[in-house]
Length: 185
Image 1 (cartoon, rainbow, N blue to C red):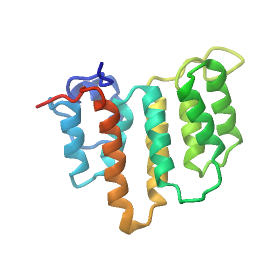
Image 2: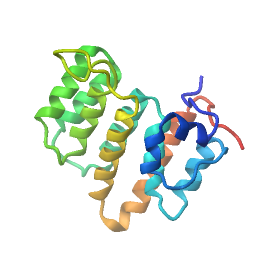
Image 3: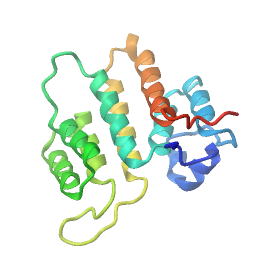
Image 4: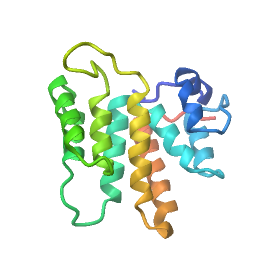
């Protein structure tokens, strides 16, 4: 079964109107992966990161961001508690691990991509507060995942940034398309 929830790029923008803040390219009736490929090869390839974050379901978006950031991190970097908490939630998306990811984000360094990915996991559903029910907005995980990936890409040396961004988008496509879910134009 495909992980792709939309038939056209326009449907993604209709489901998430705030996406227009991050992707200025006008939506089309192209299949989402065709539109994504066009964004990645366009004048503003960073728009592709935002589109990736919104086409993926929340859990997959957190996984995609965590794996992207892991690949970008320098070899030998210390373990990142935020990334570890987010990955634990992806493996077992229980409410307890969602709250643990949010706790790791609250305790983490706000300049670290892993902290933001843990926050994305924490705000993936359920209540935003432990004391009373405040539902998470449906696009909050995507917005936070986008931020985390862009922060990580900003740390990549400029000479390697285009390749890292391309790898990031290709990882999203593989995640969506791993079971033949790619929509042909």
